Image: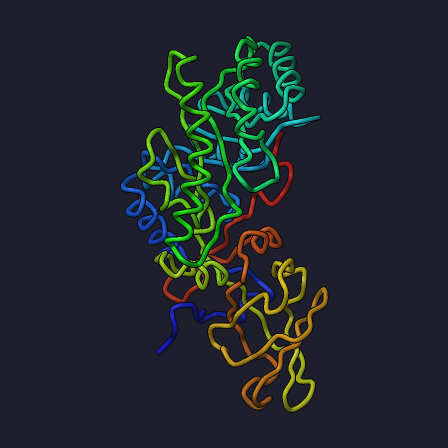
Length: 367
């Protein structure tokens, strides 16, 4: 009996390669909707998959709001027909004009971006005035990630200064709580409460200044279940769609399943207890220490050394892994792994059914 991940025509695939399993992706989308209680608060981050086909699967599931971090991902979403696209990044330099190019090229989509500094807001407003558009913005708050965002206590004064900019429309607040990934759900909830309270305090102070409702966007995959009952909020899980080894073993309370794998071949038998496969730094995210991948059909192997095109594995017995053996791996971190491939092989019922282009791994699609 074949395991769910095995491919019959594996000789059609030149390894290392990325495999995606649409039925499992659909199940993960169903699960995220179930956990969120529907689609109204969902704003999935597309950083994990970077594929038009997955965007369309989410749209077919009723999801209409999305989040991304690059202009190319925003364009991919627009091409897919996404109605509401948040560029969760601060456009500077050429990105200012590229964002407006997107707005003009895809008028059916509503675009917005982040702002956390007066100079950034000034430049954005100036460019928007020059081009005759109004840009929807979210104020980026530093709720503990210490990466971008204005400190919450300084946000009201900042908002007061820029709310009169004629070409910017403040839509709400954004706070990425990616620093929260406690294994214990109780601790994760506790720390999420702290971050959300910081954002909510700003919200309560500034909402009376506006004659329309604002929203708070928070919650990546680890914390989105902690935010689903918050008032005036949206959540932005991303990794859930493919899942990976890191989150699977850190977040045991979440029910998502592996939907993307890397496949590799044994290319050399070094000695009785060591083999080499063709899965190097260029084929699986390398920012974590070894092991960076775990093999579903070889759980007893131990990665011991990796270079650009090679991964050396310690094995109990070389006889079990002759040259040409196929290994199916779950990356520890799937998001940057996907970005290493220009296409993914689509697997249905153990058969290769074509490929999906990882279109938004590039910095530029058309604009």
